[in-house]
Image (cartoon, rainbow, N blue to C red; front, side, top):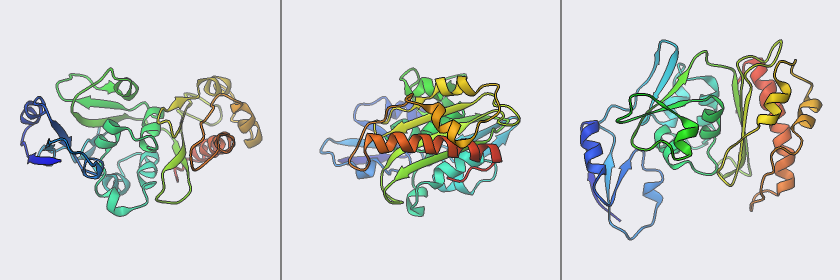
Length: 265
């Protein structure tokens, strides 16, 4: 139950307010507004903190934590793979509400952005921290606090994201993200991240090592190379067997798409 909404005008004011019990940061409000809670809570709006910007800074793309999915989709400065991941949220109304900072902080189990950001080795700028924190450390609990921005370092490598859901607006049962430094003539710096309904993205390190320094194999060979490295769990939408099959298909598809330099989802 929301009892008050504060609108601080500085980061310091926001952090001071958050230190009080019964408070939470409010970005787009997609999750907080959907929560049915009888506990009193004071929300701290981020709308006046100037965290909505998206800009290129030298060899980096910096996406403000309050930037919405729709801003990401519309901004040519954002890597194509990330724009495609944001576009997987089919509703424009939701894209205009959901923020990248909120997506990372809450890390919903079917997020399409988080696996891709892990594959791209994005970093998270936090209030009070001098240096950005790798997103994998933030998600594992080693980073904490108010997210200010997401930092993606160039060169903005070819990246692709794929997802399985029963409808365009339904929860995703499977998400596959792939990113590489180069895929032609040889594979270099490959990173493949897969997530299912558990909400715990898995990096396919064995597959990455097996392809490093090699020419990207044919699609059947790619599907075979994945083997049993990832064992998805079933949910009400898809069986584990179907997810395992689709993992092989989508990994091969994502790598082929990355090689062509496209990032359609």
